[in-house]
Image 1 (cartoon, helix red, strand yellow):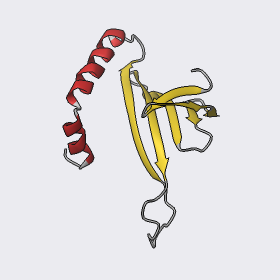
Image 2: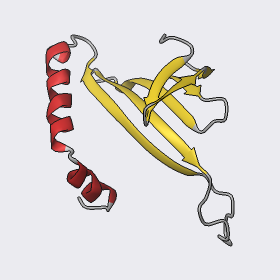
Image 3: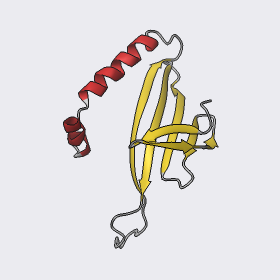
Image 4: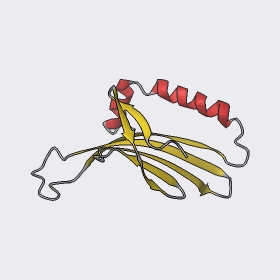
Amino acid sequence: MFTDPFSVTYNGSGLSLPRTAVARDYNRYNTADREFEVVISNNHAQNPRNGIGLVSIKLTRTLTDPTPGDAFDAFRPIRNSFGFSYSYDLKTRAEASVDVPRLRTALDALVTTTFQGRLISGEK
């Protein structure tokens, strides 16, 4: 398990997120006000037949609804998240220590501010 509390820097400020949930497949960490959350999940049974493992980490910020006059749900939470998913062969982990960092670097370079804006706008 990772350290408790989990530390994250957001917009230049250090955040301390104590562990708030532990389960077989995930750990959840939250700030005291629940504005920020980190979830680390392990889905090793994604496809047991071919041995694919999936590990993900996601940081979420929850905001108050900027449109409190919403007739359907005046207090719905707004969530913005960013995460990474790592998928690899569970049995051998072949090339995972070399290939996964290279894949992450390639994808990080691809997702520029402009590209990110296009994704958020709904382009596919």
